[in-house]
Length: 188
Image 1 (cartoon, rainbow, N blue to C red):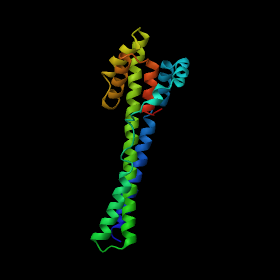
Image 2: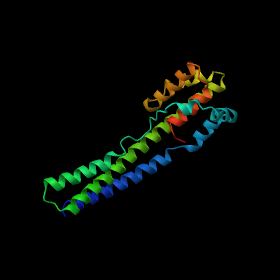
Image 3: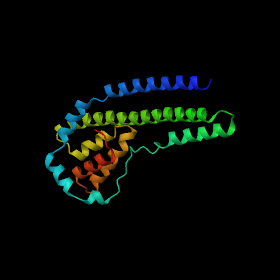
Image 4: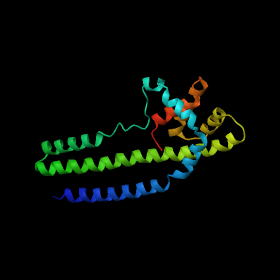
């Protein structure tokens, strides 16, 4: 019984931290600036021609924002429950509840980490677009503006932008490359 009280307190503290973290991410999203920047770059005719092409459907899309660790918290919870049951004389119901609480806490932590990564990439994307807009208005080409802006961008988004620049330099159309990027990185 002495183990359940600290576990419940830890769960309550983690839930409070998660709530505060998600609120801070919501404030930092700056969705209006992102929508205005995307509207500046997107043209409706290019989107229609991209949707009709089937070349992207045949390729496997790599998703850098996938959640490969989603299964890990339940697995750790089951492992801890079984370990406690086999190594101690704690009753079955308490071992299962400890494993469940641990699994829920780790799931919250993994979800918060994923949301943090998404918000970081969204903030970098907003900054990238804010750097590109003046370059495009001054007459620079889209590829040159994207290359110059990607040199200043940080690590999570920089690899994806470098991939876009390489694909455009190899001859793929810019609208097709950005449509594929939208599939690879499903963020608003």
